[in-house]
Length: 149
Image (cartoon, rainbow, N blue to C red; front, side, top):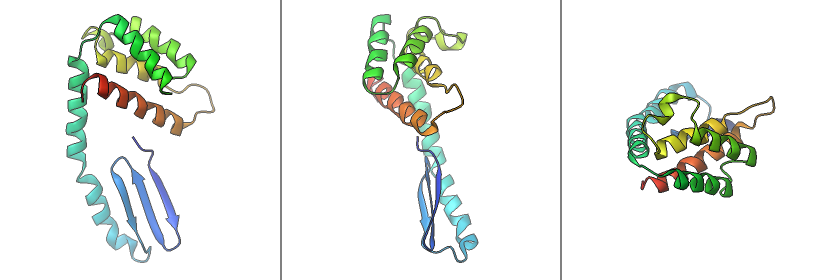
């Protein structure tokens, strides 16, 4: 997931995020072109929603045993998706989820995903949202592999 960014370059406007990269060379009359750019961005939402639904379904249906979950969390740490402190928190969440709903399917990739994302939740005042985004992408990328996506 990309963090949305709006940048102004000499004579042009550029926006990029999860919906894609949209740019216009000139800012003159940008208000006339903006509806088309917005329509283009919105047009990808149904496909994105379908892919996300497929991901959640695959995560919920992919059973793993507790040792595989432990190994997956260590691998997430090795891949830079979880810091050492976050790894400890993720293991706690894997063993005993804070939220009942995270355990309702048993030991699945969905439970592992929720354990990881609970651990990634920012704390403190000096939060790097870009780092949280990068780590979230690594978690999803690795768990997509585990779920066979």
